[in-house]
Image (cartoon, rainbow, N blue to C red; front, side):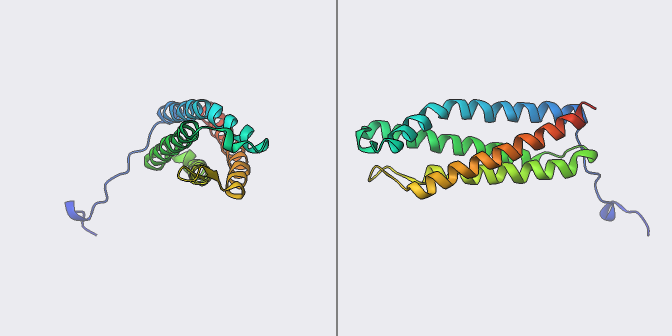
Length: 156
């Protein structure tokens, strides 16, 4: 087959293992910072739910909690997009696919929690909230385990 400009596939540009490790570290830091920022709002809502005192939260407090939940979802969706756009080093492609999928699942679970809050009625769909909480725990554990595997390969 003759090679002309039209039928030559462009070579895909992969990151070096070091570049990949640095970028992944930055995304993990973003995830950690977002989680740390939303944690006090989650704890406040969780306490009110466990003590059956949701009505004791002011409208402003409830809206602030819901807003923080939405903000963290947006941050996680952005991180997920960045993970999807990364071209991992060849030896990490499979591991990176797993990282992308687990974090996408985690982001979806986080959105379920944010969506469980109804600011108009100041109510929480408790079944969705608790399922999301459990799902987030599972996905974050899997995500961190996979990240550890990736970094053991990156630093090997």
